[in-house]
Length: 514
Image 1: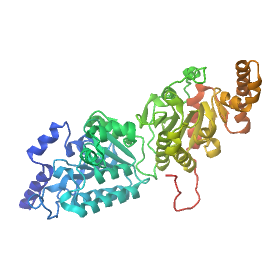
Image 2: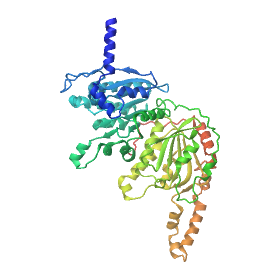
Image 3: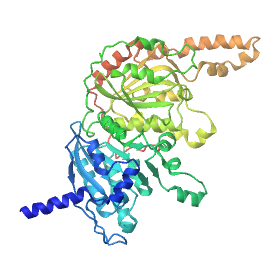
Image 4: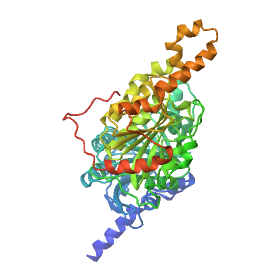
């Protein structure tokens, strides 16, 4: 037995250090942690239990025959984060460049299956060169198995992808199928085809950072939900995000006791909305004033900034917040913001996170670019997501709520549970000025003082039709509230809705307007 234990110890040591000194030096020269260092930093100290450490590739492909390192370029296992169980895999760029072959893929398949079977989140730390060329179609088959499991796990357990190096070709599709994608500035890159191929095919000269860097995907493509300056801060953000999520779709998000008074008044909100209807203000001021301790984890903070979405606590309960941002494009809904909102609403609904929607929307973005780009179809995604959601839903109308955009922003008519309006709320088919131009076109054309008459008609229209009391009389909003009472009202509303249960009609699945 002593001899066998010695053999085991030797093999385990080889598995812990499969890389050559040269490969390790190359990894560190880029400012990157190793696969195991990342795991040790992310998980609670001493909690990691590795599986498949002694796996080696079985291929006889060109260039692989004389090198069969343990782990085959990926470390897999399970552990805890703040005492909560997770499964994870961490690709090792120092072994075969983190490329995926048959054994590498099977290890990931196994840990994905374990995550679903045990109902815990799965975290992928991605740092690999894509499919292992030497293993050909076998490697591609391995990727397919990962994608299949991503799709099957969607909405069952949270799936988090952390891009800590290159992710190219087929390797990008697994992160794209997961719930959240994290990237690190300057070291993370994602693209279907790299700069060399782009240059050959299209003639475009582009750097890896420009083509698929963190900020490219955070600001333009809408792939990266979170971006960090370095690996450690990125992994800190992963831990923080998990504090808002349940382990699986059958559990509630973890409550977080707070010293913040549930009945706290927020008098500063009375002066938040400017007197001039077209003057912007920061919606995030409202959000931070209302949520527990002012803590708000924004989702996609750099993309589609005319809509802000994110996680917070109100009265200790986790909530997902969706809000128009008047500081950007006056808070209109466009293609990107509709898609961003739809994705977030569906994520919250999948994992039992109540939704709070703050509305200040003048409409959908006009223009041929938007129409040709499919604003109708993309706007319908957000509408569909809200209509489908069964979690508690609360709407607060802060200022403008115009036209179809008002309906899409979780209005009473599409199923929100409770709707509140501030006295500054304006509910109408369109803004007063535009409405007057249409309704009173002839009268204004014939007037001796069109400007003065227009001002009178706008004031009259505003008084008669856009104030929140007309909607309240009809029951389209459940109450008009003092802005200072917003936190108190939301806390009480979330409390009554905590026991909400809703059964949807039996069906295979809906047909989202993709």
